[in-house]
Image 1 (cartoon, one colour):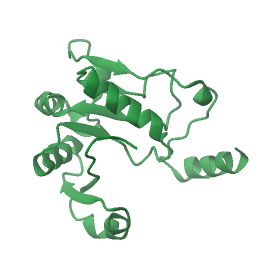
Image 2 (tube, rainbow, N blue to C red):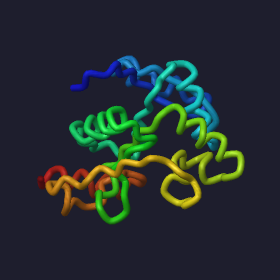
Image 3 (cartoon, rainbow, N blue to C red):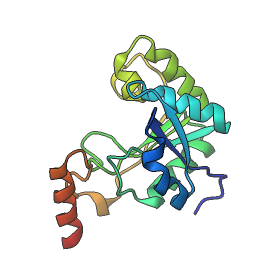
Image 4 (spheres, one colour):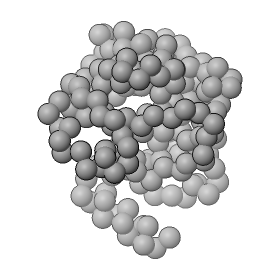
Length: 171
């Protein structure tokens, strides 16, 4: 639960809208189509369509998010006027519980950066984590101890899915 006006969008490559129609209807997502390789373009299209001031980025390979963590990061970014907040800090959060929140101003700064960086076209927030010259007021959410010993939970392959299924069955 959150006091914020939240709109849900599914950002997909061109020509894939029909594939996702059943879940978008079921869960109330609006669909934005854009470039398959320039993922950041989909975010700018979504922002223009929605008028969003703040964007929470959740990727499809991280389906096991903690709702409280998402809301905590959103609130920190809004209340303390950070440009960017996230969980996916190396060696602190398990891979697969990633969530990022950033301002519209930061989105367009990243978009401008993407003209010089192929990494940023696909990995939207890449410079925030990898380019020391790219400045932002950042919030790194501290690790909740209950997540400390979690295995890799991102799902990129069939093997990952099987591992996560086994882990879920045993927890």
